[in-house]
Length: 70
Image (cartoon, rainbow, N blue to C red):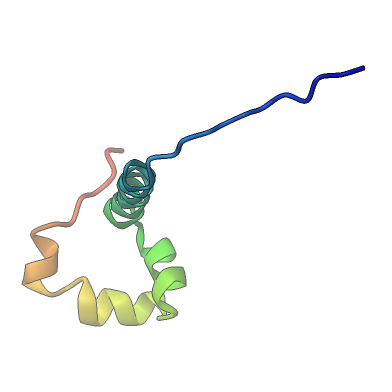
């Protein structure tokens, strides 16, 4: 004869929510910080030519542009 086991789990919902928010924020920051023009084109559904001409040439954007070291 088996004795039924009693299992009790207490979950701190606020801690779980905070953890999920932090992990999502990390993922969002990584996605936004490391984007090349091709990935940006995919994310925005805009052509690379349009992005190059209209967005990336803006001086406010150029300040944040980083180029690969070759």
